[in-house]
Length: 418
Image (cartoon, rainbow, N blue to C red):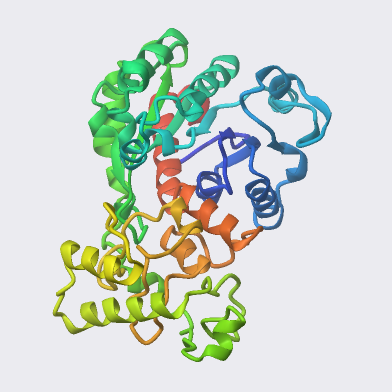
């Protein structure tokens, strides 16, 4: 993969979160972050900090726009003295300053497309505003006309149909109106992060959009088949990482079983180490006893606690029934289950496999399972950090995507990129 350019590939990150996608792209050394947009403050602070300290990006404080992407006129032209978002020159300023951009990356928040979310919501989340954030992503792509875009989301987007309109039919048509093609084989665009150096089974839809005017002499569907069937798979890891591979060497945390500590809302020791965020949330004695019991069951190999028995245990412990599988111990010899933003509420589905610790995973462990580097600094409350990690694109998956995108551009648009 040789990128013979005077300048790096210029990218714009939308719905950037704390920067999982951006970080993976930056790790290649082949991309320049022109600007990013995110509306949650803790995520914005985290991304600004990472770009400035890790990647030595100038003016990260200004170029990571803290703003509501639905306010398009101000987003493009700038705003002043907003009580929530302060002031900014707007996206147009930074894109024009860079003489345009080559690629847009990102994806609207996925909860509205989540099958689990639709099951829980009485209206199937048809009225959730996040269903319509795609329209703003589309507007930005249309305005800046990059050669490519990367649109990431949950597989549930392929079956979502707010107000009876299938999203999987809307998206290709709307992008085509703006001059972009995506693959006609949408199921072939589902990627599992576990295949790309992420110790986690995490399936996502990765849509690559190709600008027709940029590739006029190319059969774009064949180009996309090449990306999904050959280029991206060539970056798969040789061995699937397990939970123990990435968090097995983290310092152990000693549980406290005495009332004195629990009256102070302290359930575990704090390790003396240089690792930030390796402190679990407070777990009460009832929960700790449950975590210990379930981890011991996995350790022993008995595996007595199937879904039915776990439901019975939950009812016995809590005093009420639950239609959802409430507890899960992470198997040390397998990839983790999907890390989700619900972690900011509780970690019951992410119980540490070591029964002696009787706890759920720490924010740092969640970050490692999501493939964030140990030196990644998360800024915010514990809840903020769990949420931003759960919503992020795993950086190692993003890196594989970035390397694959470069190969695609070099191969099919050599006049500009090779």
